[in-house]
Image 1 (cartoon, rainbow, N blue to C red):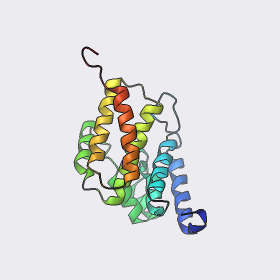
Image 2: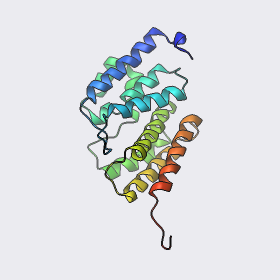
Image 3: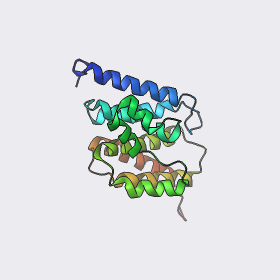
Length: 191
């Protein structure tokens, strides 16, 4: 798809979603040591989804921009539905954690629910995990190597239950995963 193929309504939808994400995540920072704006993460996820779909699914790209608004901002499902339509609101809801629950429970639920996600939500889930792992590699948070290693393993457990969705996204995730596992693996006795 080239820029001449974009429908004006599709381009406007993606622009509106990116602006909404920028407004809602405006003061948030990534966990990395550099304190990069959080918007870099949602833009990366949207970019990965756009590449994976050859830019042919504007609603999915918009949902990728919005994927963290329900769990990390004051945005509500009904607000997303009113502004972007029910399909986008549902996609975002599918990939949103209930932040009132403990982290261990949320992580376990992501693994359990990953296989049952709708196909388009799996695109966002895999792109999100790939982006998060890339962030840990490029701009690591102040975590121990053991914590990073555990995080990579958990992310793989989620993505493994989404396999068969999109080879581009899965390859991107796998490449990042293996780089991290090799970098953060615990030292073995006698090494």
